[in-house]
Image (cartoon, rainbow, N blue to C red):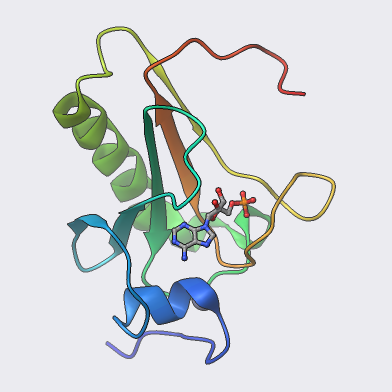
Length: 119
Ligand code: AMP
Ligand code: ZN
């Protein structure tokens, strides 16, 4: 399998091991790291290995990847000790959505209560 990657993409470079990160999980589809600027006591980013710009580019072909992303989120929430009290999984899309890195990622946040809707 040839993985799609963008040479100048920060998260493609992290997945490739060209830039340092605090890895907490990897499998053939998903790579998970600790966020460098955590917004909660647990703040993990789940990245597809392949370059996908955002959730706006997802479709029926990505079912396996999406299932894996949520499966890994749940497993990491359990191992982080945040599953029982609840947590948030969120993905930002585009500028108004608050996306700053244009490689799809899900934020796994836990360890405190989050307000809804987000600010
Ligand atoms: P978003 O704003 O939704 O695109 O999220 C991007 C996230 O990536 C932010 O929470 C940043 O703190 C985080 N981030 C940026 N650079 C790095 C890095 N080198 N390692 C880990 N997390 C990063
Ligand atoms: Zn990328």
